[in-house]
Image (cartoon, rainbow, N blue to C red):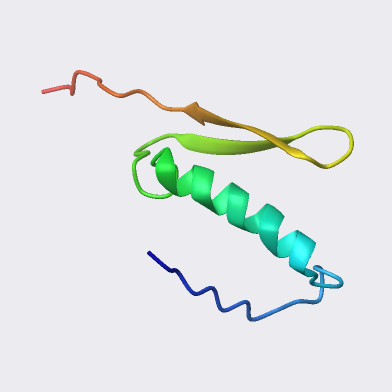
Length: 70
């Protein structure tokens, strides 16, 4: 599957290199594979990087089930 990304504002991005594209692709692949973009309701997905700026982890914080008040 191929997803096209249209970035409207590059002011805060700086130079967009092929290496950065590979990094972005890895992050988006993980977010999609783990359901972070549409599988989390009433919670959050956090993206973590190490001191050198390498993508290291995605943390999901949500409750998969909760009894609703009646």
